[in-house]
Amino acid sequence: MRLIHLFRAFLKGVRFSSLLLMIMMTGAVFLGIMTLAATNYKYADYNMLKSSPDDTYYLGNLSAPPFGIPWSTMGESLVEELNQLPGIERAYTVKTASPIMYGNEGTVICLLHPDILEDFPVLKEMGYDFDKDPNGFVLCSVLFDGFKGDSVTISGHKDKYGFRNFDIKVNSVVSPMFKVITLGGSGNARLTSGMLLSGSNYIIGIDTKENEALLEEYTSGLHWAPNAIFKLKKNATEAEKEEVFRYAETKGNYASLAEIADGDLKEIHEDMRLSFPRPLFLFIASLAAYLSITALVVAKKKKELAVYYLCGADHKKCLTITLMAVGLVAFLSTVISIAIVFVFRAVQRADHEFFYGYLFSANCIWLVLGFFVLTLLTAFAGVFVSIKGKTPVQLLRGVE
Amino acid sequence: MIELKDVTKIYKVGDEDFRALDKVSFKVDKGEFISICGASGSGKTTLLNIIGTIDECTEGSYLFEGADVCRMNDGKRAKLRNQHIGFVLQDFALINNQTVLYNVMLPALLGKTPYKAIKAKALKALQSVGIADQAQKKANQLSGGQRQRVAIARALINEPGLILADEPTGQLDSETGKQIMDIFKKLNETGITVITVTHDKAIADYAKRLVVISDGKIVSDSSINKEA
Picture 1 (tube, chains in turn cyan, yellow):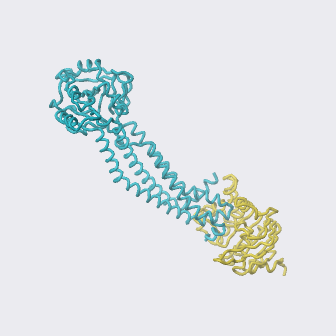
Picture 2 (spheres, chains in turn cyan, red):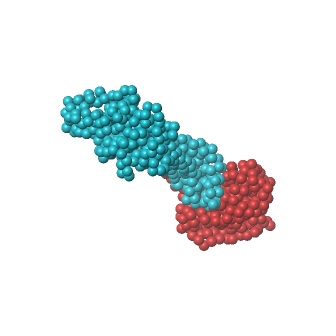
Picture 3 (spheres, one colour):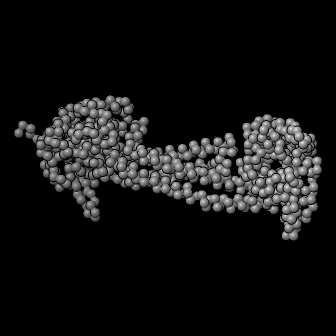
């Protein structure tokens, strides 16, 4: 308590500069956090895609203009044709239709081939898990944030004019944070990037007989896109690959998942090159400012410390008070910065639309703590150098 | 109370040694009022600093109430300084941007007395030097005489047995200087040992004993005959 009184009094005269420094340091750390969080996001996104098998492609079938084909005529022709090509190891159906209505919001429904989840772990990583019930669905949308329950009522076109409500079983709710294969391209997505989005509204299920029967009954008025994911044979010749790509081009747009992942990595490097110098500059600037303020505090307070010494403070107490004063600035800015990380994380968890493109993972906290330790160590070293070696008389000589 | 035996203090000045004190032996009994006189650079302030434990001797021994100060670490010397010694310096050594009250409370804040008791003691000390009404003013708002009274009040707050005053009237006019010395005299009458360093004969005459120092050596140590 007495030490607090001494410390409070000691801060007098350097409060304004300390406050300014604290704001500057917090700003630098904040910018650092945001840059790191943006890189975290891209890196996590890249890691997701990177885990896709090699030579894997997504094909959005746009062959049935303008909005896909009726369920009754869809069949399995695209996958069957792909499987017959000599360069293809395996092709999987990804049947997609829209709009399915949930309240007043439109969403897309998608049926995946049962084997796709085993062969594409990336999908499981995204949360597409059907272990609970193969006939259940995964609600993959911010629309369903906070949804709890075993079933949900949605509506689809039974015929050309009318909507019909029906219930589907719910396995889980996933809010996709990352750029995920949202399995789009239901006839009107003309760009491959449309296949890799985030934040779109999707209801994902497995292409089981029960689900087919249900959707046939309630969505027969919708146009379906028989999309596909296909994997090339490892030993496929160039000619065989050429044949596959030529076929894919006739059916729609296709994209290599590996190439998209590589593109992500390049984007990360480019982003780091462009965005890191700014927080780095601020870090260095605030570190320099911190050292200057520390030097100022020590210089300004040296005489005061001499008085403390005269009145019966030992070197240790003089050092403690000085270190508390210089440490407080770094400590407060650290607490504020950590609080920012936690608040942003909480906000992001509550609503993924907020801070889209950022990921506030543990390394953001480590960044803040690292900066805190670095600044403290540097400042403490400065304080030690300027006070520790001095005899009381040398300190007293500074007294007016 | 105090016993210095063959105390030597050597400072390094460039490559050479400067002998500020040379085998000084000096004894002070409780309740004495001593003036240490000497020319500038004679070593009187160095002697006071060693007695006050803010400087260490290079050779010799220093006993404070029987305890060997030379063997004490920084913490123990600080505690001794805090509990048993009060300082009054020529330039006041106050924290100018703090209140008078805080300046007086400072030595006690470094000890273990509860805060409320410290405040009460500080006000009492200010009252004893006649400036209790200035308690909330900043130190730099006071006159030289008032500042020196604050320094005396600060020296008194922990009720020390020894007060060391280094040229306490050096920055004051003669009338104010007299008033300050009267305070020291009254304090001495209550049993507090007072040692002042001065080169002013009139100030030295307030003491009961005069120690003259020259070139780091005590050249004379005698009682002052007040009736003479």
